[in-house]
Picture 1: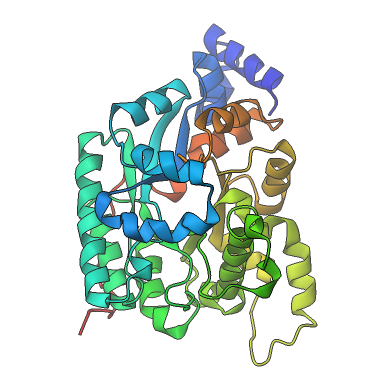
Picture 2 (picture 1 turned 90 degrees about the horizontal axis):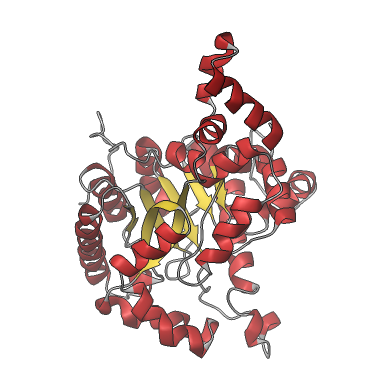
Length: 373
């Protein structure tokens, strides 16, 4: 539905015409917004914070970012008060899901310390969320060194703290989430229907292809390819086949995946896949089990391609605050050359549904057997 059709529908609603169509029109948030003359409300999902105890972990990213960002980043990241809210208000962002800026405890060598500190930062975030529950939500920070403990912490954060899922910062000690050891985690995540946001991070090695090109090591190039490959390991490793209700979220317009779906299917038929099998095509699992956000990609072309490839129900707005400009991201989605129905879906409605915003997860009737021994 284009803007002219929306305005026509809104006029009919306001004037009392087309009574038979009224329930359908009201069910469309874009029509309702046009009728009310409201601004486009937005929900953002890749919005970071920091606490002093985690600055040493955050310093792991310094080789990837400019010194200018290092200077302002931590001060802005630690603000969860009026300054952040004012920026949200200025740009029509009604609600953000906060996440600890990585890599966090995933680089901690002492597993017991990692588990304890993850619990502590989740409790800190929950307390901040409770100060502004209508504006803030949270992604759990997890110690993936212990998959069973991570599963338990994910459930605690969603059931008791009201979080919307978890954010995992890439690999943990060189191990990726398709490994068998993480089955206990995916079983619990699927049972909770918890969205798992896989955020970019460095691999443990430094491939030769980046030698002499520090500009490629991080957000320009390596992070996208690292995260895309991590997601593909889940697809080709059968994680989504074994756990159909597992849900992954990728930022940065899907870390390039939406633009290669055809090739993923085509080359799967002729690649050296050993004993691996899939009941469906790789693109089937990508479109069913992966949702993406617009964080850090303010391109009409990229957005339209993503909507076409992934479907309009699987793309969500985000900023990547404070590493991207909120003003730019907001102006982008406000004016993107897409239908107004898709605009409202991307801006807020898909996030409300996928992250079940406003609905707390209840206790599992029969929790999977992943208790710590």
